[in-house]
Length: 432
Image 1: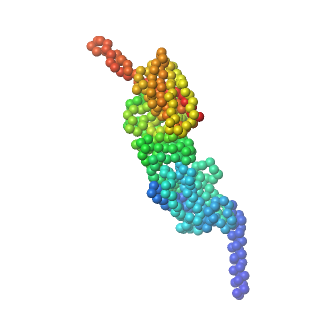
Image 2: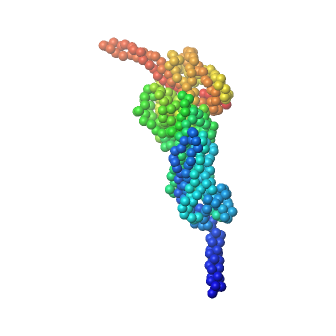
Image 3: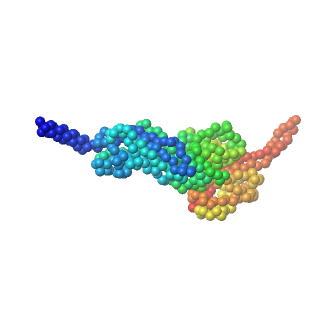
């Protein structure tokens, strides 16, 4: 009797072992993440490290997973090992925080369907701005691996495709007086895309600290701002506000802005005007030629921008711009400056104090004006320390005193008035 029971138990054990072996042998399906979240949504590492909690739900139809027993690797593992990893990365930084297998504790379920939770510290002094859960990896006991990415062109799926995904971004509210964007960064919205090159430093013009996580890229109500300086008779093709509301931010390298506009403007040259925080008048910034519904230009500051489809100006339309200095060598010296003269043919300017000049979007000091026949020669003092290598455009606006005729009691009289105009020219300066 005992022998019969022992044989029966042995048979059952062998049957179960055989089934498990066949299941393991046939399992080539990678596990799935069925939910992902993190908390809190805001931290501040200004004074201390901050704890973040990550929760992941994992399911596997085969041999199952056991992330808390992993060797912290997402490579193919020995048969009795598995792994779970979530990376949290700053949008403008290169240092990721890895939440790895042994950081996790299973809070419910089993190897085939479990919920895992981990806490991790974002260190003191970490990069301000938005952090993202940008990588997830799960490996089962046989080494079948599945990865998810933050919309990157890598093998695997996108994190946004994970069901029940929430809390995928964390705002580090730490403030800084100067912030380096360590890697190429694209800041996009339905209005525009802003492209910033690696190792670009952002500063507040007034020199105080700012919270980078508040950076916006959005439309704005033009009627709520001053109309002074706006090109009259123009058709506004696009509007964009970039930066932090109430602050004037600048970049030490040119930043490329691409405003989305109607395709009817394709092939047209638009005028770009800018209004700084607390400025009383719009200034001519540069121009752009629309291609594929995008108006692309470079700037060195964050503010309000308007793209206008046409210009009414007092200039004759045949003004040409020439210069005595078209090329400068890149320099990091604070003493790097150069006086450059620009000749505007067939344009009469009367006063240098009524001339505003911008090179590459940066306002430069007008130090001289002289006339040569019907041409005007404007001299500026250009301080170009740490200006990035590349081509720069010119935008000049002016006003001249004039007499305006009017009739009073049947007689023609004259009163003082202003003649306003603007001139733009691409690629007037190259820094190499």
